[in-house]
Length: 216
Image 1: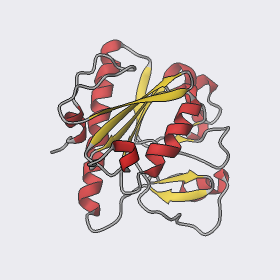
Image 2 (image 1 turned 45 degrees about the vertical axis):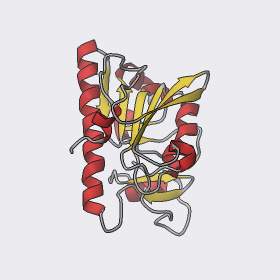
Image 3 (image 1 turned 30 degrees about the horizontal axis):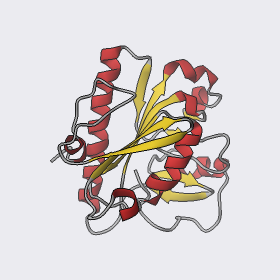
Image 4 (image 1 turned 135 degrees about the vertical axis):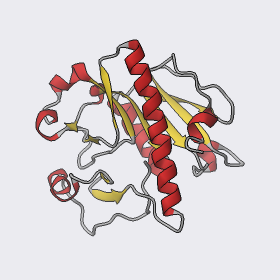
């Protein structure tokens, strides 16, 4: 879920250990370059926005779980799991939805004790539901998730909050599907009743509207 404020919530940069001590038990916070951000939306429509974001993330989770079970993949789904890339300094993301490969967890040194993922190879799919500060979902995370080698990344912008450079003009609800090709994401965008193309779960039969309007 995108960061809900343009400012970090603390005055000094934190190390990962400091972040883990102060905020590790609360999945509403993530760390980007030493700055702690609150993932929960703020403002006059906070309750409505929070509910909508939860419903979109839950809808994606439900559909993906059905695919995993149907295909028999050795995977499971986590919401807001702590992803601390070992090669990205003082950064720890919390993707709204992440599909984790069970077979790769033996390589995760922090998983058994702290349930922290550090390797992109452990994650087959991530999704972020865009909130009031959309920049990280469309820029920073596109670059970093690609660098980690995550095969597929969804950006669910149900309110059309992204910039015109990202979703065009006039702005409208958009589902961006980022597929990893030669180390970089190729991005396809879907709107309305357009049927979505998937690489990780080709059996999914959904339109952009079904995802973006989840929960009504």
